[in-house]
Image (cartoon, rainbow, N blue to C red; front, side, top):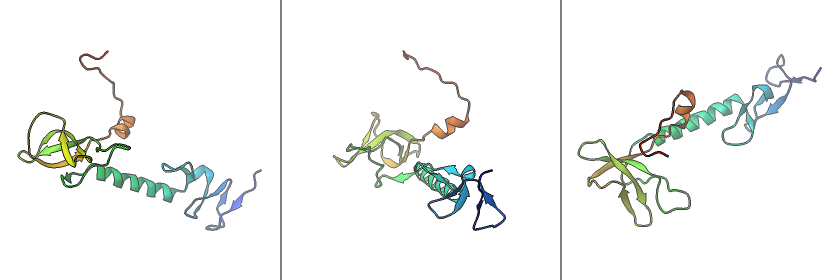
Length: 143
């Protein structure tokens, strides 16, 4: 029979494999969660905090920004990530573009000329696609 650990918080609770989280909370290893930010097992409270932080980041990525605020830079490059740029006149998606930090100017990938009002990051479907049953397809010219 494995030695049981008497939990400090509740003397009636026993743990087979006690672990202490970085935050100081004790939990049974079987009740721990894999951290998204490190290679550690964490308690429920820290897992909830990580999820909340990720949700906040996701909300930020779904927001619309004034043209005076620039998107995140691509690592080791002098330009930003590609974003959706919106037209001032019809407030609808106009084109894809990015910010060139070297030239200090916006670059639109299409050939249409328009006055830019705001931009947003491209959506990332990876979490969504993990939960749905989608069948891939090919486009014309796919080899």
